Length: 128
Image (cartoon, rainbow, N blue to C red; front, top):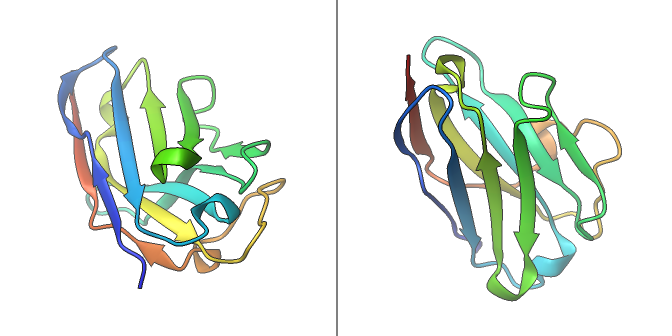
């Protein structure tokens, strides 16, 4: 069983920064790809960013490219999402997900189906 727990959400103003954390109690964490998704009210869940098992490949949606950075700290079994220059349209519940396919990279956009375990989400609200 893999447990995924997000933290770091909150209420911020336009232009502010936040760093989300994702702790995964997964054995062999260093072989798994990680992803951050978000779901805004009334909208479908969308992929925001993903990082391959080695940390050498990343994917970003066009809406966050240049503002968000995904990273991972293998020793801590933790992934991060640094979010800068936040906008009201970034308001959503942010979910972390773990892909258990060993040695998965993200040279192309991964799909939700490729991620096996999900956290409960953390709310990010950006006021204008």
